[in-house]
Each structure stands twice: as structure tokens, then as C-alpha cells.
Image 1 (cartoon, rainbow, N blue to C red):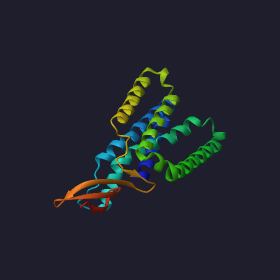
Image 2 (image 1 turned 30 degrees about the vertical axis):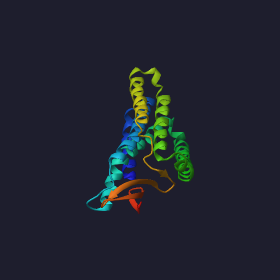
Image 3 (image 1 turned 60 degrees about the vertical axis):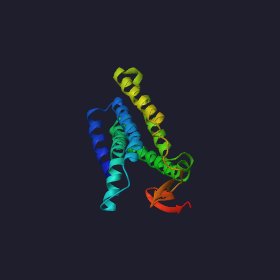
Image 4 (image 1 turned 120 degrees about the vertical axis):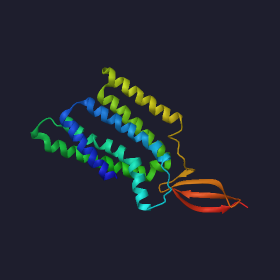
Length: 212
């Protein structure tokens, strides 16, 4: 799902870069990517882990519904950044090489930081919300939205949407405890007239404990 989204986003970003090579275009794509990341907080809650058919099919469908749009939106950014950074053919190789080097270094650093510290410290939902806000701020700075009435109005709506998502609790984790590996949930349910304490790891019920 992620690779398909990246391929589609790169293709769309290349098309946009050729036809609209402006900072405002990059700002709009950053804004769309921010809202797409925000949508993960909503769609992931709405997609259940239950399946009546193939488990593999259900996993792919879940991943596509939750992540395909955000990954596609994020994939549009690299071609636009590259197009706006290139100043001439003579320095194209160096420019492309530096962009890919910084991109790889950023992916490496963020991967280690997220896996080893950030998830356990803040939780996935808070991190996604933080990424959304960071993308919106970056988009506003790149596009200098205060100089463009329509962009300013659009980004104002986007910031209000993010604030509403926060106030409605979408950035709050549904997990009792988040670790580097699992979203751990505990709750009480009733089965055959008996009260049971359930521990669930992600979408898998791990333990049922009879409270009596």
C-alpha cells in the first residue's frame, strides 16, 4: 500500500511540478498532506479489525483505507521540491544528490527516533497530530499565505479543522498503554453471563480473565 501510494504521489507530483512550478503549489500539496495525515486519526478508528473472509485481504484493505491517501499526498512533495530547487542543468546532479542524501538521512534519523523513543513517549496518535500541525506550519511559511487571500483563507480553515480534531479527542490515543510494539487495551466485557477483563494487543485479544 505504501509503495503504491508513493508511486502514485511521485507521478502526480511530477505532473504538478512541470505545469505549476511555484512555491504556492508546494504549499498546497503540503497542506493537503497535512489534512490527509489528520484523516488517519479518524479513519483508523472507523475501520474495525473484524473480518469474515481472508485475513490477508482484510489487512490490505485496512491499510489502503487508512494510509493510501496520506502516503500519496506526501509522495507529491519530492518532485516539487526538486523542481523548485534546480537552478540549472550544470548543477542538477549535485542538487539531486544532496536532496536524496538529506531525505535518506532524515528518514534514518526519524525511523530510529520514532521506533526507540517517540512512540513510547508520546504515542502514535499524538505524533500523527504533531506531524499534521508541523506540515501546516511549513506549508504556510513556504507559500507565504499571508500574501495570498485565498491561500490564507484555505489554511485558516485547515488550522481550524486541526484544532477541532484536537478538541474532539481524535488525537487522544484509544490505547490503555502504548509501547514500541503494541497498542495495549484493557476493558471489561460480559461473556455467558460472566464478567471478564480483556487485554487486547492491537486488534488481537490476548487474554480473558474471569474477575470472579
